[in-house]
Image (cartoon, rainbow, N blue to C red; front, side, top):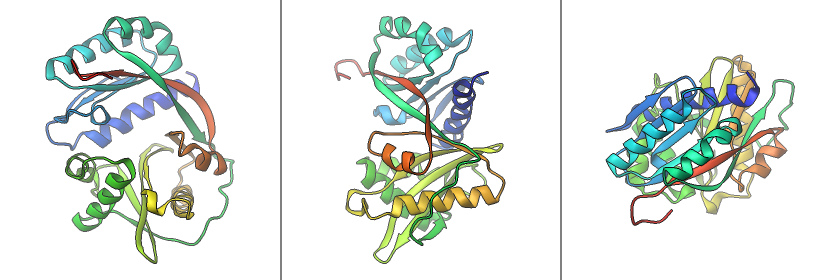
Length: 256
């Protein structure tokens, strides 16, 4: 198995771990594919990931049918190998190609540059979970109540999803979520509100989290980068593994 497909499998497990505690969530998964539907009419909260698999086409068809049945938009990401076969199927099902998402990895032998000293705490308990939720909502311009329902619920000791907050003199600055699987950890929800950007807190937080996980035996880290976040990840030593095709399914009459 090539590294891209291996990381897709880890992304499938991470997405399931992040969504399983959400109210009303519907999860369907194989080793290489996962569909997560929620009660929200927003594509960011209804996700499909597809790796190369003999039954990936069947999984895609069933996923779109279920999303349509529930009246949910869908955001889908595919491995490049899967997309070769699935792109015509996705188009036939009414999906639209909307770009790519860089899949990046930090390898074990890459040193993480030092960053400014920063207080970092794990978001455990309702008060700190709410702090992390405030940062996520502000950074991604998402409705605060939805963030509470679908992100804060997984900020528990036993969820397998760990969220951290960086603090500055003015209070909480940014947050990041880590989902460990074996010796590899997925990085997601790297959230810095606009008023706290370009101050070095995101770099400090991610650097400290990576160093801490390495001390605990974690050797590799992966993430899906946004265009805004990619310069930070490049500077920390992450490298591009693949550009994953991204597709969307709109609600009828709502556009893409």
